Amino acid sequence: MPATTLQTGARARSPRTLASPGPLIAFGLILAFLLCFLVLPVGTVIYTAFVTETGAPTLGHFGNFFGQLVFRESFFNSLWVALASTFFASVIAVPLAYLTVRFEFRGALLIQTLGVLPLIMPPFVGAVALQLIFGRSGSVNLLLDDWLGFTVPVMDGLVGVTFVESIHYFPFILLNLVAAMRNIDGAMEESALNLGARGLRLFRRVIFPLAMPGYLAGAALVFVKVFDDLGTPLVMGVSNMLAPQAYLRITSVGVDDPLGYVISVIMIGFSILALWLAARVMKGRDYATLQKGGNALQKRRLGRWESLLAYGWILLVLAVVLAPHAGILLMSFAKVWSFSVLPDAYTLEHYATVFSDAGGMIGNTLLYCLLAAGLDVVIGTAIAYLILRTRLPARQWLDWLASAALAIPGLVLAIGYLRLFKGVQLPGSDRLVVQTWVLIMLAYAVRRLPYALRSCMAALQQVHVSLEEAAQSLGASRLSTMRRVMVPLMAGGILAGFVTSFITAAVELSATLVLVSTESQAPMSLGIYLYMQSIAGRGPGAALGVLAVAVVGLGTYFSHRFVERSRAAVQPSSRA
Image (cartoon, rainbow, N blue to C red; front, side, top):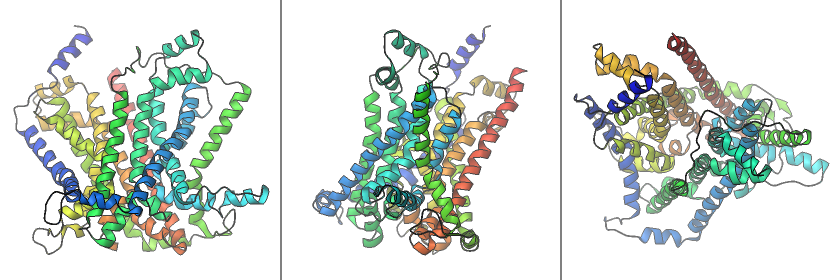
């Protein structure tokens, strides 16, 4: 029988109602987890914004919010920074993606890899480094003033926040756009060329429209991330934005202040609106091509002057986007760096300070992020299995609920935890739940669950159901089949989800600032922020930032090595 017939028959049987109570129990446990640590905290925030102290419905809190100049200014500032950052991130990412995918480049893979590096550094850490390089007394402006007699104030106020956010988050557009362009059928381009489309017109009328789904997905993520960011404005001394105002209201006025919840609802609303608009723009339009994995866009050679301009642009972009990494590395070794292009003296004392004073922060980061990432892949694998391998009613709700965490700012989730668990004590203890590190870890897990879920879903979709059925026909129980067959075959996707959750949780600051109650609970992200608040502590803060980048980078590297080895081990057996 042809292989296609076997596959079709297997697919027809793939989603099935399972007789055992296992799937129902898993469904109930996951639903309870999402309700307790996502739906109820966010629902509490929304409810509090629309009721009075007595519980009566009201819109007065919103009227009070828009009636105060500082809040109106903060709202428009956040909106302006998010839109401007999305625009400038596109200016960086779109040419970089097009040049490396469309034309022959030496080191194209290296260029794309270096372009993703900003994601592994917290944006508030990059802000401090960029102030030393592009600030009024930074390296670049000192050189410009000395050579040309003028300076460029790109690190002042909202312009500086926009500059930092654009550099940090443009990889979201780059990654999605590169993937989308690689899936374009080359025949579409050839047809356009035969009809006379060339250069910018070809890109504007054919290539970019076909890659629009990838671009919109990345642009929506950039808008959401920038709109919700708390650490960067605080480090740069900008408080007239929504996230800093929400944090200041909750920490200064108190957890009962309604205006903090109004700001949180506005942040949730605009995050959902951005994701909805990205999906709405694509609705009803056909971006499909006739081939996939066949004839991709033909790589073309650039002329001499074109190559010179292209490499010049790419080197300029990489120099700017990698400046935070260079700056933070220099700062970690700098004994004195003030009003000079480079540090005046170097030392290793900052690293000694970090290892002696901040060793607990490194351990806390590993503990919280490992537990959060592990919880994410377990829940993500279970949700993927329930959706793709069962016919349980309402199983799709789990995907919707888990994915909704993308639109929930970490600050809002943390505020919801404080409100929901206010006064709740641990069983058998006098200690309050909000005083424990468990909520920090759970906030990390809930916020990163969508990343792990997408990876686990993709991995399970590539495992044919006939392999599972073969194991069960040989007497393996469903649990044994999952443990010995499904999980090993999904190892690459599970690991990818684990690493993504781990590295993004390691740089989480918004939820951390609100939920950490004692110094002993502080992870590296909070330690870096506290160090960076004083000039004297920026050296140790930079050293801790370098260690954070190293931890994330090494984790990513070894995960890729593991995935490659797994593929190499699977391929010989499949050929056999």
